[in-house]
Image 1 (cartoon, rainbow, N blue to C red):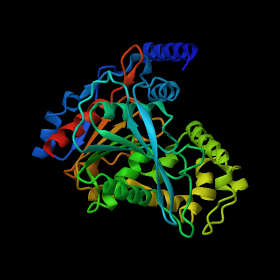
Image 2 (cartoon, rainbow, N blue to C red):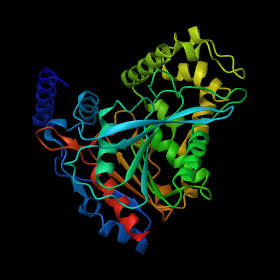
Image 3 (cartoon, rainbow, N blue to C red):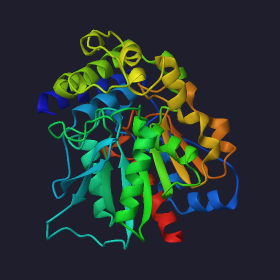
Image 4 (cartoon, rainbow, N blue to C red):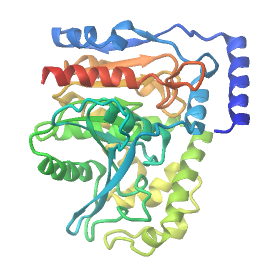
Length: 383
């Protein structure tokens, strides 16, 4: 983000703040089932126990948080990444990014045999500042940490890791299940944790419920989970829909040689036709649903929504959501379902946007990293 953009965001945010004076002393709602385990978690996580956070005053609306997050280029400089490719015969190739550092001045105490796996948002990659910073934060905290890319939009390494099964549809959740089984075999004796963001948070939550008895993780955090795509898609604003659509189309054009020339045998989508889609729903009807083996976008939305699986989750999971998320509607939050499962807690803030929660005046940073790592650290100590 350049200086002019920073000044514009600051002035717009200041004007909004002065006009409507949103609640900067931002208390948040905390939903959970009353039991001793959850009370112990809350009491041992200071950022959760406090019950509030202080958003940057000039980023006092969710849309401003989202815009700032998309423009902010601040990243931790000490962290580097190495790519591992995992190939599964007749099923495709996947890219995994591993964090490391050769900075001899870095203060880091490694946690023995502890790993955090990051699930990115729908169109996020290792180039995104928020992805770099969460990996850096986890690594500096002592964990081994990796980014699990999907096979469609998140892996941007010259097309490697963007591939399809030869003869049958795939699902995002089964992709991750196969990758995690291989990583678990490579890192025997490790305890695994997970952090999911946006679309990745939904996939993670679905995995935890669908494969509750085979899940590799001991605890997880889901940030800005969409929960219910069938319902949520109906609340999506036209401007946000166009932003997501254009981002996806850009990637589809970038890998034209794959999406057009290497189309799987089991599907019949028309590459040139899908680029004419005017909404995300239309693109999902013409492309995503067919690629994943569904008849329509609605069938695809209903099937992948994690709201149908959260009652089956058997490990501690913290969900972090914001009421002013410009992408996700507050109406999709499954408050009753959260309170009915003793393994789940959900923070719902008034301000935070989508994977935002910026705090601080100069070079704001994301607050959600605090409760996220406090939650994982406490459960890591118990394990």
